[in-house]
Amino acid sequence: MKAAVIHEFGDFDALKYEDIERPIPKPGHVLIKVLAAGVERLDHYIREGSIVLELPFPHILGADAAGEVADLGEGVTGFEIGERVIVAPGYPQKEEETNIRPTVTAPSFALPGLHISGTYTQFMEVPAYALIKDETGLKPEEVATLPVPLATAVHSLKQIGEVKAGDKVLIHSGASGSGSMQIQVAKALGADVATTVRSGAKGEFAKTLGADLVINTRNEDFVERVKAWTGGAGADVVIDNLAGDVLAKSIEATKPMGVIVAFGFSAGPEVTFDIRSLFFAQKTLRGSMSYDIEDFNWGLEQVRLGRIKPLLDHTLPLSKVAEAHRLISTGQVTGNLVLLPWTE
Ligand SMILES: NC(=O)c1ccc[n+]([C@@H]2O[C@H](COP(=O)([O-])OP(=O)(O)OC[C@H]3O[C@@H](n4cnc5c(N)ncnc54)[C@H](OP(=O)(O)O)[C@@H]3O)[C@@H](O)[C@H]2O)c1
Image 1 (cartoon, rainbow, N blue to C red):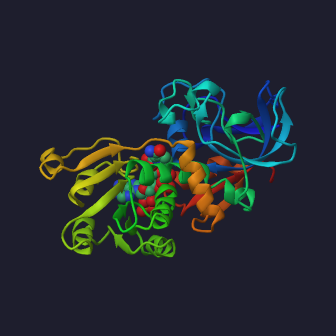
Image 2: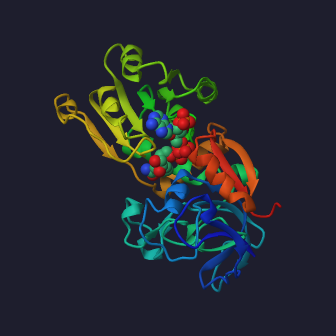
């Protein structure tokens, strides 16, 4: 079978499209025929070696997969060959740890593509308890846009940000894989949404997702715009996907007693801010990492109800994986990019 493999950390050409051995499902595991695999910015960071210093090379990247059941390991019940499934985007490798919350703190927690073999492949082996029946009614390439973006967006807004109907929420990089999904989740929660972008075209895209206020940070100051939008108070919750030199301003744009959720670092991992900007007005800075299965199930229900839509930019054959990483890393993707392992 074919897979996209890295043998060492490196640039885009570290991704090799090659033949590897097809896995045989262990007892309790299921062999999945991967029909579509989403590409995350995280995959790019892992490939270049900026997330972990070691991997068990050769290694397969990818955390998002939509597929169908190809074979059942001994003892697996409840699934049938050919049934459409979604691979949970991270799960404990020990079944007895699946009740630990937050899930990411389970000692055996593993993200496909990071801690264990990932989804950039034609077949992968997954424990049956880490599979979700695909009842979305969507095409595989649409479903593959959902796992990480949807599950983590719900986690950051609903569970960590505690966003409720009527809240005014600022979400950065509204056309990105994470931001575009976070806008939709915030709207599904009944919030009013402001978002930042860096181009007119991305702003138009964010509007189609329901953003109430779009701020182009190339020529507008988002703190001023959010203050004006909220009658001078600031946002109830800010989802900060950017960090770098943006986080200090995110704190400024938050109302007294409000919450800033640190979610990502597209603008850089190092941040500097005046601690007085946080505690004088009793603001809270919280981290959001990964998701709990309840978040993903809630999000999938919103998809089934038509309140959240998959945001597929375009698909590429798995053999073009290096090009997919180049597009992601150079900001040329609006929404999500998906690899097709069975298309030439
Ligand atoms: N906490 C979690 O559970 C979790 C889950 C998923 C992702 N993440 C993290 O969240 C971040 C975003 O991921 P993603 O998948 O949304 O990435 P993405 O789709 O590649 O989008 C990144 C966005 O960041 C913008 N950007 C980059 N540098 C910027 C700067 N200096 N100032 C303003 N905007 C800037 C880009 O804007 P332009 O388009 O204008 O260039 C682009 O829209 C990453 O750090 C990722 O690791 C965290």
